[in-house]
Image 1 (cartoon, one colour):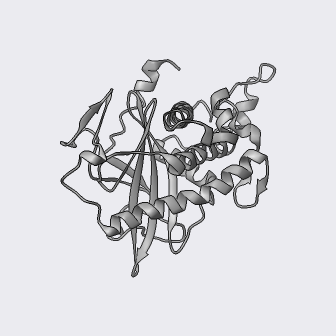
Image 2 (spheres, one colour):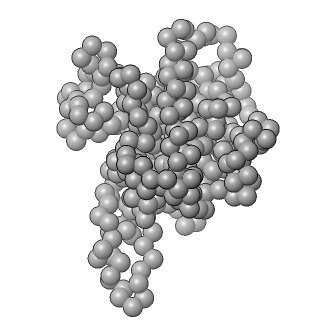
Image 3 (cartoon, helix red, strand yellow):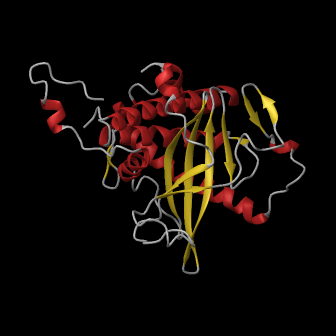
Length: 167
Length: 124
């Protein structure tokens, strides 16, 4: 796939979000009972990168730095929400470690150490056992590199599936 | 994804997985493949998935945190924006913040696990 093909996969506005209600619920979030009944729908959501007026340039991307924000102090509820996210992500660690060690899990199916083939390079593999040895900058670069590789794989896979190559 | 079989050109297509032809359907397939990846805790259920490439150098991953208020389901959306050297997070319209430390490491592992499951169960 060339870069032109990938550009064609970019019409998805960050203003759109894909929602799937929790299993066992017919409706999903409040007020969505009238949405199409296939349990999924697209809904416009809030702020985007582009329309945020309080942005500072950081290379090719505009990001509002938290310390520069004077308009909003996080509320206790918002901080609790972030803690919830971190708590949730805590639960990933065990799954990730099991996967890396080649264990099976009844809930998640077979995940082997080789499942990550193609996703990590030598530097990333180095971090698997000694993440704390990396500087914060290096850790961010490794994580971003892995995430980008996975993202590009998924972009290509989805594009191929939509074009019928896998059917 | 399909490599084809030189001896039997139509064979791989015959046994290939039937996938949705639309993006939302594919995301739903990916969510099914990763179901149970994140155990719900204290009334919360989570959906974590790759949303798509939203800029030339930006890829977005989304975490939906579903929970009940009374009889109604609510959702908090956290967006992870991946750029070449950094990852940022925003939640419910809050300013973007760089993801660091433990959260960065766990996010990386979540990506790896999502990738491995989707690759083997959906597109493999």
